[in-house]
Image (cartoon, rainbow, N blue to C red):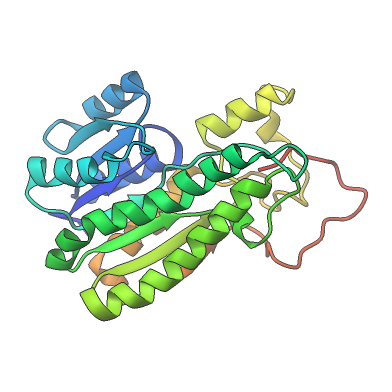
Length: 265
């Protein structure tokens, strides 16, 4: 198993992509710190993974002590820390007309500053294990849709942080830092958001080819498969890289003007 005996902390891991990554890591032999805000969902996942393989932290990452608490949980439960996956994110719409300073700052805080603080808190332990970091971004980091302005900017900032630390920490500490930018992924929360936008219950079953050439969008397990490779020793010295996981070229691709409109990713 490629992650045998590794200890991995994964934020935002009681649902969606983070949950899929946690399950894949345990299947590959790792111990994990799972984190989220929903106690019931966390306890359900903990029972599925097994208390011998996982520890649960329910904590708002905006709290000052959250980064250190995540690190301490790994060390306290398993004695070391091999990797951090910064998956938790503030998600929401906004444009220049309706985004005030408070909402913009919240996006930047949770989606970029908090991952930085977690890496900083974990660094002494990651240096000991020759560890690694994965930041989960978004293809929207390159520009984003009109009503995803603050979210897109925050993910663009995270991407620059990844490239900067991917060089610095590999050079100075032997710690790799990489990023996955998922495209449109069918998570529980994404399905719920689209229903709230007025789409039918099975909206994802019949998507225009311009948005989903494969006839479907991505599954969380497909993102987790990439994460498992990046976390594994077989990834080698790769650092400071951004992996776009989408089924079409996101940059420079313009949908036909007559294509159906689908709510923002």
